[in-house]
Length: 294
Image 1 (cartoon, rainbow, N blue to C red):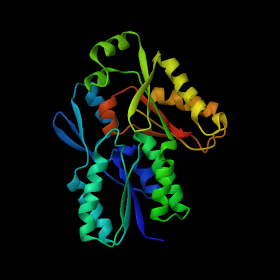
Image 2 (image 1 turned 135 degrees about the vertical axis):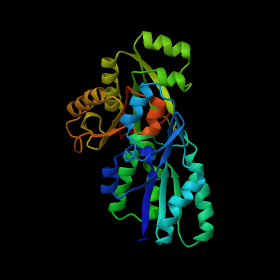
Image 3 (image 1 turned 120 degrees about the horizontal axis):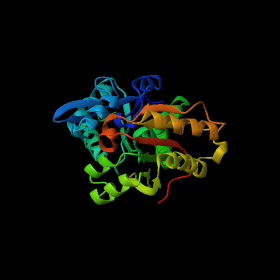
């Protein structure tokens, strides 16, 4: 079996402890607050909770994807060690980072023609992307070689189901995802939009739910409808949030509704890259289910 590393971007919204335990590697996105640059390194130098606090205080948050040069610098040490690389990127429906990784791989193949560099579009985001990486690590540990694992990821990535809701629309208005008029009306009516990641890896609004209590119930109903085996689901569930109280409510309801889960719900912060666009009040639920369609 070839000696290879399994790699992703920091926008997979896991923790450094989880990354190390699963023997994954990641490259960091970049975040700026009022022009000051930070690395989205899963909280090593700047935590998502610190980011959200500064956003609530009025700081302007922006993100930039990993540059081609950063990818070259990140990939090169593994190649020098004689390792092949299987890198899975943040969805092209959300970011252009996949193209940067591909261009870096093309550059490096000229210097390391005997090494394999495979880049895959995850069609996933946040801890749904993290769940895909965790599942891929399981398959790697079962003994799949780099080509077999790449094929498995391509065949299974659309089975990772993403559902998000948000209770604070101001950052969606600011980012242009919701018009100012619609957002203002939504805030007055306590509308909590329910979104998923679609067939093309885009974050897509699906339903407008009124009140937090109803949207918590509705996101779990979506899991009942779409998880493998319905309420008899036995797989893993990942949840990321920028509102711990709401995250606790969804976690409790999922664990009550699905008694045969593989372990408890794995909890993570929504990372700095994703949180810069969604802001506070967001909860995201991820599980394995029926292949996505539109």
